[in-house]
Amino acid sequence: MHKRILIAYDGSQASRYALDECLMFNPRDSEIHIVAVIHDLAAYTLAGEYVPALAFEQDAKLAEKDLEAAQWYLAAHSLPARTHAVTGDPIEVISRLVKELDIDLLILGHKREQRFAARWWKGSTGIGLMDRVHCSILIARGDRESEN
Image 1 (cartoon, helix red, strand yellow):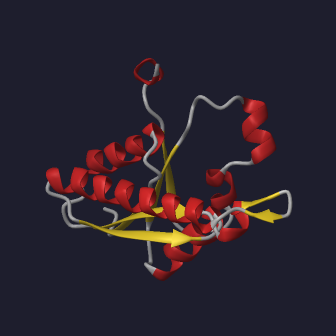
Image 2 (cartoon, rainbow, N blue to C red):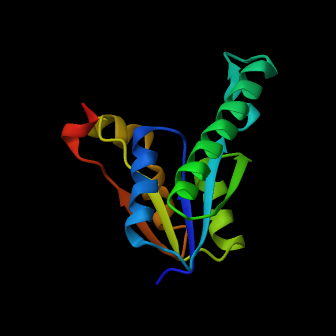
Image 3 (cartoon, one colour):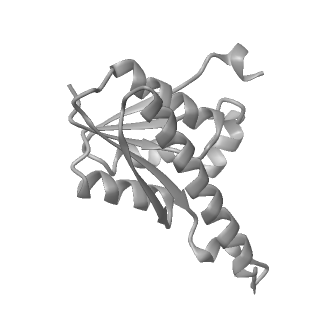
């Protein structure tokens, strides 16, 4: 039984699969955390020009709204969860939370629509985390037909 579960959530269909995977464990006695990572301000620069803080603020509000929806979804299934909206690099932020919260299961969604070349070029958060965290990682993948 997993005592502490962390779900990476960004509001996408793939991250909703991560919530559903958590439900399949029926973790009634587990401590559940949901994290949304907002890219740090450096991601909001364009050709050396700073993009107004408005874009960052909108993303932060959207992340908070997504977290609230995820929290309500789990609560509707009698699973309370704590939420964390954190700014930074997803791999760094998630790795740090896994350590700080003593997580023993990390659940990530997998976006199937990306082509192999795009995943290879951009890298994968899941792959990046495999060498950084000392807990089990579950990659949630939905049914291909339901994604279309």
